Image (tube, rainbow, N blue to C red; front, side):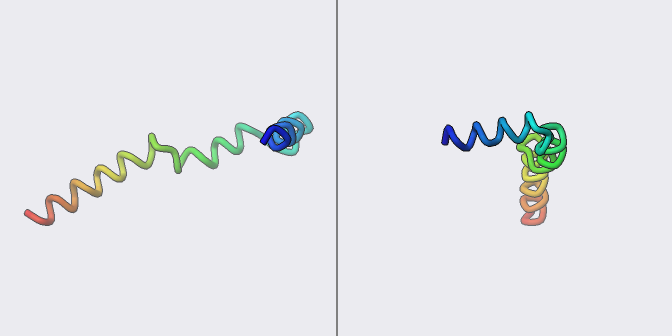
Amino acid sequence: MTAGFLKLWDEIQSGQLDPAAIRARAVPYSTEVQMPKLFERHRQLAAARS
C-alpha cells in the first residue's frame, strides 16, 4: 500500500496526474451529489405507491 501511495505522489509531482482534474471528474459521483438524487427517487417511488 505504501508503494502505491508513493507512486501516486511521484505521478502528481511529475505532472502525470492532476489532482484538480481527477476531483472534477469524481465530483458527479460524490455522496453530496448522489444522495439527494437517491432521496428524490425514493420520494417519487413512495408517491407513486399512494
